[in-house]
Image 1 (cartoon, one colour):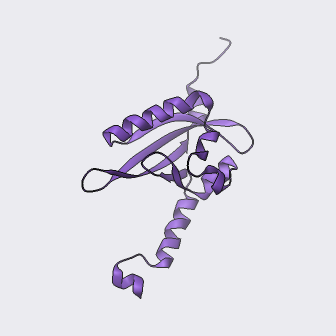
Image 2 (image 1 turned 135 degrees about the vertical axis):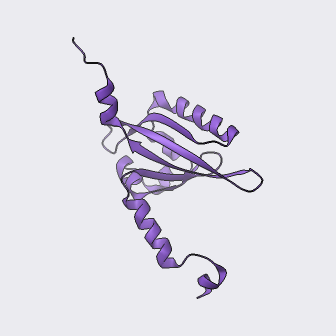
Length: 139
């Protein structure tokens, strides 16, 4: 009742949203203005094999391919300065040590004054598409 009176979502609504975010076929995350991870969905954690505590803040960087991390950080920095969305293709290490290609997309949430307060994003597996785009070897 207190939630309803103050306009807050009901606890069952919050749980329903969490189930959706944990079930959709993608890795979902939110981060602070500086890129420090604040939320990673269940699929993100299962895919990487990291515990939530290991991945939060800047721990998520440990599963990014070393050759891609600087590109990702550059795109994030540029998007932060412009307050615009970004999209980067990057490799993410799976729990078994195999890297797969993902399309990482992030969108900023700004307050009324334009101050960046949060990032929300998804990582979508594009590995099979990337492999199909590679030129055939040995021809």
